[in-house]
Image (tube, rainbow over all chains, first blue to last red; front, side):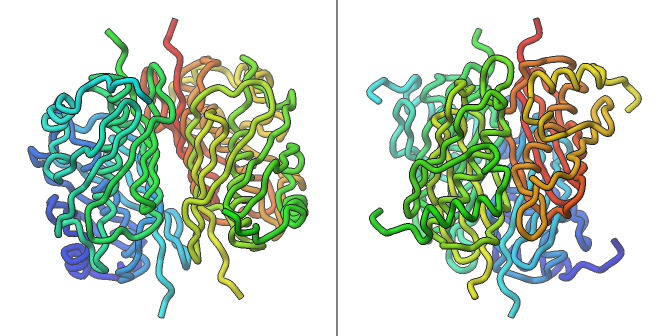
Length: 136
Length: 136
Length: 136
Length: 136
């Protein structure tokens, strides 16, 4: 899609800093932020490990939520009060001890709900639904 | 249920310390740890907040995963390699800025899969499936 | 709960007849229909079987959707346009070749979304979200 | 993928006839059946309708389960006892009153679990997990 994102990356970063301190503190950042498509990165941290040298599940869930939130706002614009209503994650393979990348894309953008999909490099597949506030 | 848990709380705490540093670092702990029933607590931390003064979704997801992992091991015993295969969460209400309690209970304990349910004080309802390794 | 259902069983049956011919054709009916609590029954039919003599998954999914739709309307009243937005089902045990009963209860009734839970006698656990139309 | 399916379409059809009479009775059939990729069709039937002229949710759930079962067996071979353990569906748009096509593809084929994804022409997105019996 060539349409521009409905908010800038700087606006999104500022929103996350304010809205999702957990994401900021885990070091998540965006490698790509386009209208309807984002790539999010969890830079490797030794704290993310679990024995066997794989990345813990909650890190993947938080990364997926971050990526799907980003892609929702890339199309819906700055709706600070968008909240997750449902998230479903299937863990597919054990993630290697390195940066994890997650792609987010929109399955449906409605007036009241946005449904998005995330994939973390074949280690997890996620769908999420975000409730959008009424437009003013 | 009057049957004793198949591992002690001390064993579980040690496992989490080693297995799930994320849970330990977020300060999660167990208020109750019985055979087939656990209560997990996320002590309030200002980092958990999102604007509006509610607790961020990833914190609830991580707490639910922790509670369901605990209740699975309370019945299956020490199977360090139990891994989450699916987690589904419905966010119901915005959590107040205070400790969050989550209850975990077992829906089914099979030979290969355990399905558990978590409820965080009417703010979220979660189901999870854990794959159990073959018994030696 | 002693509060009366916001629609009568007759109204619900008529709605299903018109709205969900699939449910009617599969023979589903309600054993209980109260405000916030329903019991739905799938009378045994040989067509429901799969080898091994258990009931096929799609029958359980359809029964759960029917029960959760009923319990949503028991509290929200007649909102014909309530539509399922998400449904998650965990299959727990193989159902015996006989009538299946499913209980439905409400986890949250919001202005725009209703989240409900269904349990089919320890053979399946289901959560569903229904989008509610704006009130006129 | 150019690898041949691990069972023929005729074998699959015979299995469904025996295993999933519901699918057969609803008229479901396969338009494509390849190793790791299937296209399933629900031929339009007036019984599938709900008012507003859209297709009822349980029909889509049953079609998704059928497509994901097919794609699982296309790669796992004839494992009659493969059973669904989890299914999650997001309803995206109201389906038009005509044939519905669903694509199935495999997200992960493990020794014990297979995770698949289904999409019904932008009207629903589904993930499912199937438990595979031990190989003899």
